[in-house]
Length: 311
Image: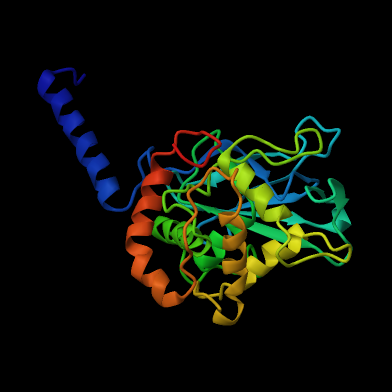
């Protein structure tokens, strides 16, 4: 029998060396291993019902989880509960919300104001990007996060079908948020990735700075009107995203969509934000980007969970 103290010490030494060798050769510790975690997604174009929801890893092709926002009579109206399977802690995620008329998707239009079915020819997709995902976190996808994703070089076109040429990193998330704040004249510390309470027929004026901002964006009659002459929230969201090129720069021929909306935001006395003159040229954006990205990073990293977008 080998019960002597020297023998036991020798065996412990061998075990320790083996462990270090595994790590040196690329073995993963428990802190970096893949895991499952529960999250939720609450899109906001007004509340979204029966919308398809997908959450992808930073490579843009690995599906971590999917679900569907509940209908009006469901237990989770306008919200999707999702389990992220195989998520690597601390890495970015990409959220995709699809309002598909083939799946009876609808949304609350603040202009009507009533629940509106998505038109047969108007399938609509919104994205959101996050630097990481914490268990229990509620992800928002809305016209603002959709802009941030486009500024970060993420497009809905091939998401989930083709791997991104460069995986999404946290720095690009902060850049996307910073550029969105700059082109709309929002405070650079505005955390547009915060969870938002969307407007509904029962609660058309939800509390929270970001919620209020989205209502103003959806209802201000500057352009993007529908056939009835009222603002079209889907078209406005599309126009904002379409003014951003696939490389994350501004299309100068379409930049008026930013200045027009900024003018409307400046004129709203109840917004609760100190809106300033926007940066709507690529040169102006680059000049202000460093400081704006730092402010966005701090706001997102220190976010406490409030629905105001601040801390």
